[in-house]
Image (cartoon, rainbow, N blue to C red):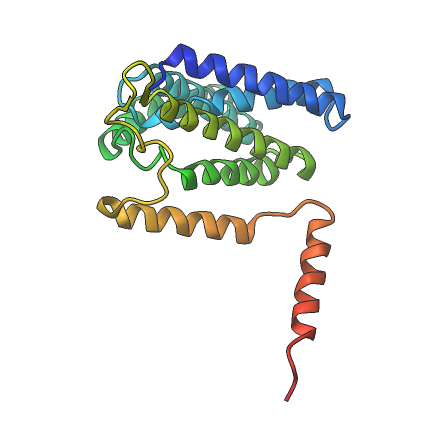
Length: 229
């Protein structure tokens, strides 16, 4: 599989190109473009979060710890005295960094559920839920962010598969096929829950402008074709 430096370099280059296209097309401003670049680059490391002691896992949980502390500070600001607010933010960061990380490491297996196509879709759906519902991003930017996250995630999986091919020896390594997974009978229940989460996310997620109307029109036309007896 590709190493940490390769993953972050390719994710950064891919995100930079995609961000440049969005800027050139006038889809985002410079601040939003910086956010999209960050999302795509970080997403290029997400699949390795299930590796107990990998560099991406350590980086990502540090980032999650910081995000947890910031959310507590912003959400409880004015509701608690300053010392209690800082204590809660610090406690949240510590819990995320050490307790949640250790639990996550125990229940996950590297190259397992997170190295799969439905996991890439779920990462984008979670971005939509967090961005639009919690962070208050515009629907347009939320969907762009979700696309960058999913594409960055998929780029990681594609790199892992590419590095599973030994071109010099003209054979496939043992790890081939473990990154772009659709389903595994050995973990059927986990995949069932994963696909259920993806379907529920697609059903509940807010649609961009124009899509809702198109879907409504399509459903109306379909119902109109059903004969009434």
